[in-house]
Length: 433
Image (cartoon, rainbow, N blue to C red; front, top):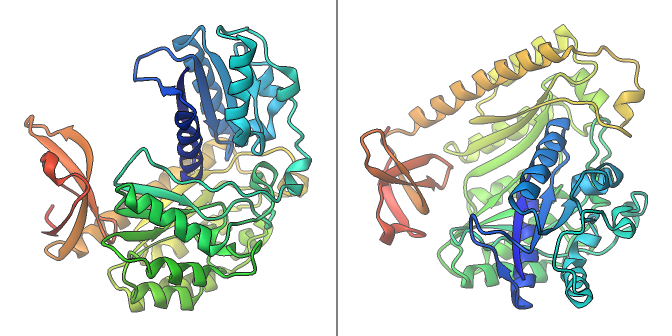
């Protein structure tokens, strides 16, 4: 059968979609080509905000229009949190929760055996009713890494979260924190490298919590991966500031493979709001982490997750937030606008509600700060020597010239004239803008 995958959301989703696709190809199925109608369409969804839910619904409708006769399967975080809502979308055939997601191959086998070759127009109610309460009891860990981009591999090292921040539904969508053994992660990393990957991105929901299932530690995983032989590099996708220890930072600074690149969730620059959110650190601890990174890796790129407009974010809290962000030597902000999520503690609190237009204004303000900081970081490194890993994507410049892109070890995006021979190779360059 011809199968198409559509993935929305985080790196973890992309890793899992790739693993599922690999399993289906090994069973003799084909991946539908671009523009070709598929027999089965699988949509792996995100549900981090209301905007993500809206994009999911739009994508479901679009895929159905493009594949009117296909069997449509919806899975992922949106499916886990709101299965009934999805089941009532016209044209959806199956809704699979996070654990059921990894049984897709068996489901398709049953579909083939039943002779179902056309879209039925109704949802399979047995699979549409996901047990949302059972997600916290799941102990299984399904390993995954992306294979679609041979340059960069997203390697899943952890899943779930035990933090239950007051605004967040991820523990309800992904379950409790769990992980494979270090030996299993190293095995998958080596497999990805043999497949041609030159860059591995460690991904998960809360990767700094690695080891909860196996009694190991994240720093031990970092050391083990750094011992792998070969010419490649590793990035740590996102690590909570309270779990990003000085020991990890110091090791990365002197490692063979780990890039001077960190992504750290801040969410708010106000201690008052951080407390409301249920975050496990203060802004002072966050500043210490950033300062330590810069002291041992002055060229490090530091990305920061920021949320704006949460309940309780008063004008004074916002002013403190902006002042704090401006004071940090960070390189880029990943900005989220808060949206109310069902079954979160924040909705039960008697707090100031930030109007939607004000949330959007604050988001624009942070985006402007981010743009300035990124430009400043790039300018600071102009004229320096760096190593770039060239990627396959190409784009036409204003003068019609074909360009290709790549990233330096500290995540500066550079371009050059397109040369197919350079794809997935490292090259020393002088950074120019």
